Image 1 (tube, chains in turn brown, green):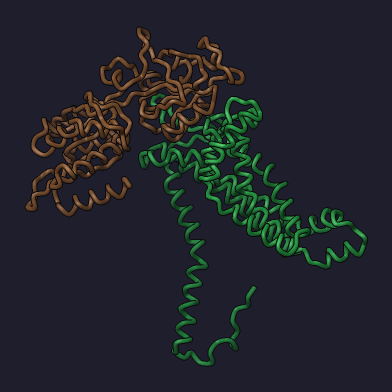
Image 2 (tube, helix red, strand yellow):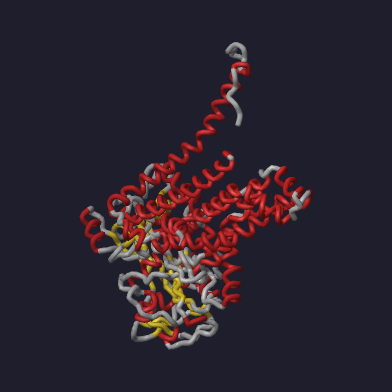
Length: 294
Length: 308
């Protein structure tokens, strides 16, 4: 589906020979590229925006945060999507190219820690997580966290992780493991939902995934950074009190104007924010939405 | 073995009529069809070599690749490419799969070939072939959902995604093709062997054990080898049922990670031309050579029968 819409958007782009500029027909194309985490949301926004402004087409492509930012530096996109902040080196490159990337936070992605419902553990610290997941960590069994998990043979901690090129994996490594490596032997799932499903089926398991994938069949302990323990929630992700939440960004070249500004304003409006919420991320602003239909 | 058309089979003159044109056109088409498999094999081999060789020459550390279990290609601090755990993972899953598949498939083949008759036999053959038509992702799903819980409950182990789970799934997947080939091998044993055994007063089991199976030995071995090749190359079901954990298993209840599953999980999001990309192609190259060797052996074994 994504691919097809992408293709249509791309064809539309080629037909119009030019980006971000009004054409004779009055149609405008906004080029939007970057993060794979955001690509589904960006796609949903682009589709929905057709009903708001039929004269504007948004061409969305993925490729990763780095790809999007590189394209912004080269001046070939109007909006770059990123699930990480722009690096200083990229900022310097952009300035050297006469671009001035401006950051817009369009949503948040909170990483929840998942354990089995029978697990009595109620809170976990970032240090403990590093002991469990990190290459130099020493935690191998639940009693080391002062809990006894019923139904868990040998009290062994079954680590559930993600495949090594996932953005979630990279974020977890950067924030929790201080850019160190993961301990070998974790079960590396190929999707956030698989992590939750496996934790649900396995009493000994611990896993991490976006908060959007939480359900009643798994338990989420609160996460502490050494001071206070915060239960993962959309609100805690927004106010920054939850220690493992990352903002999701869109970058424009200079303060947005015209159609790009209208589009970004619409994304940050209640309608746009309800779409990102329906896609399973925390919105950047407080919104009340109808039951998510996605 | 068809013989080349002799002069007598050709039209007396090279008359340019419709039949002649059709004949030539069909010949060309058949030729293309016949050599296409070779072209594809060579093309794929060249492609894997091209993508993997730069890594093999520039970065490849023989000792690390075959002796280290640390597969950490995306590490920021110390990327290493140890494939030992992946090789052991694939081998252990294939081994368990064969333990499951050999009794099932040889038993089924003997029953279909020697005992069943009429409708039973036809129904069984169709069912076995239907088993081969189940997509591997469905097998993987069964492993992930049904088998996982079953293994945890039955054996009281912490996790059900392990060598045993993937091995059973893979064994059931490999069994149909092994059954079909083994049955062909048993059918190829001439009936005079059976008649002679019966004339000597052998019971059915004596006949099967002492006459039929030894006579069909090469075919049976090649059926097993093709099953092994299937096991080595299977991806999706193993990815889903093995637990996908870099680990040297101590028992069948440990999670492992297969070579194929690693390539499938990582290739899609790897930057083209990076070391990681090259390393995955090096895994592919290794896999290709192993499966090639297995299939070649199977083929040579089958040729062994024909010569007898």
